[in-house]
Image: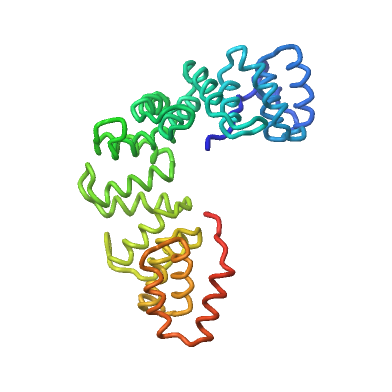
Length: 325
């Protein structure tokens, strides 16, 4: 989800002379006085403060009011934020058609966030008929302005052939732009491209590089793939300790396939053999519908005592996902 935008304040003096102790309540007071006199920037910034609860009690209805006043005067950031609130149902009933109306007004003025959000609506068919070609159009406009999420999504659409002819080289170009800006999903998908040689020469070393960058941002899919490559010796010697580490990080976030692979590692003694841990992780994966998890859990149970099975079930029952780091 794109975060609400806030334009930086402007000052006619030097930077040093503008510095005051931060005081959100005082800022809200002065924005309020200026907003009531019709100043668009003040109306927008006051809307942001009510939306976030900065210096005032959070009040989405008040945020809508001030955004609408600025949006009706053609202020693109306010139009975008108003679209965001209609799309999320904040302060109003969720209304994708109304969200699209405001996104389009801002997007037509060149607002990259609005262009990206409009592209998402066409991609997902929310408030408009699903139209991948129209989605590509808006994603490209945003990506051409350096919008990271738009670059990532555009790269995926080229790789999948959604709304455009499938073109891995073009997809890799957009994914790299996103990845170079630190987008974890872009880094992960670029790793996939290099691992499988989709439109680029297959290069496990390059795949590992991009997976590591994404995994270190907490991307569970990248952590899973690093676990697989460490286990199978892709890009280097097999390393079961590293495989368990990466599987565990992804499994802790609730990724079913990582839980399944971690369970198998413990069951087969690839690293320490631990039937209780194997049973727990296979159970957690099974609850998410992993097809082979119940069968493998039954095999593990043949090597366990009744007490060990009860312990494993208790661990699975009490397990809670951990947020990504």
